Image 1 (cartoon, rainbow, N blue to C red):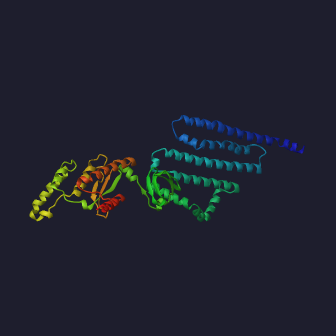
Image 2 (cartoon, helix red, strand yellow):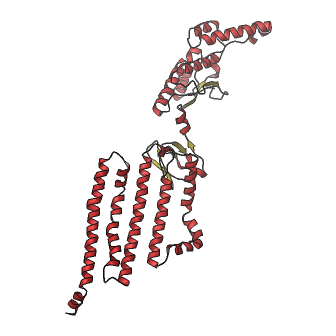
Image 3 (cartoon, one colour):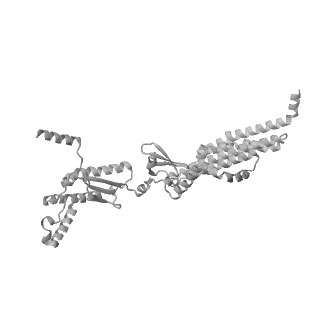
Length: 407
């Protein structure tokens, strides 16, 4: 009977509490079942993508949780029977919950804003994901301070004033974050790395395209489709190679040698000169060289007769053919460096190096052009009386032993 009398005496407070809980429940249902669904449908009907990102990151759903908490927070002061410790406890609990909801809502909104920014081409040149993550970290720290201040019944700036003594500890704990922040600022300001760049970082075995630039790490998808994560600050402290310049130039370099046997180098005979005059790529070269040598011989007189006379060689004529062949190809850039040069002789022969640029940077097309060029040059080398240098293989040694045994 005493319990019933107490419940009857507290009937106004119970009715007020029931009304408050019912109002909060109705507000929660209205926010999640009505407002959020309306926003979902509105976002689906629009042509814009920014509202879709807000839905994907659940920003409206998080904000809808503020409605019931705000009703409880406001109703505690109005309804009777909630004075004293009960009121303080409810206000503290609802305040903490609102801080948490706002913290998660703001971080979700920042993620949505970054996703919207990444949908624009400028994001590949100026990625902001690292800065967004840093701002999210600051929001989490501020939210945590507000929660701790509320639990301790202290003002937030009182806790902040005590951080001066914890500076050394914070620098130690957030050392990597601080280094990554400085590195992100430098990478963005100096435009060193963009999403989509082909970079090589030998220290980490990374060789591929940058697929993500975050605050702490940079993700590189290697050509074998593996993923390598590199600390952001290591791209500032260590060296790496960025192939963006090659892509922006529109041409990719070919730098490869053909090794010729030094024993096959000789002067050209008159019959060979006449033969090469029939080569469209060598007609002008041979004619110009013959006129030059004729003038030089007439000026020098008999002092350059015989072995001292200047004559054309098969290796020099071959270099001229290679140069004219490359210059005539439409897939070789004529506005960039084009060289065919003879390098110093080595035990592997005389290297003839091709240095030129293709008109494409696509890997497959580049390899096809390079393969076609060297297929042709390797096949035409014997026409100049030259031999390719190649170390003896097993079949060569076996052939020598067989001939020696039969003799």
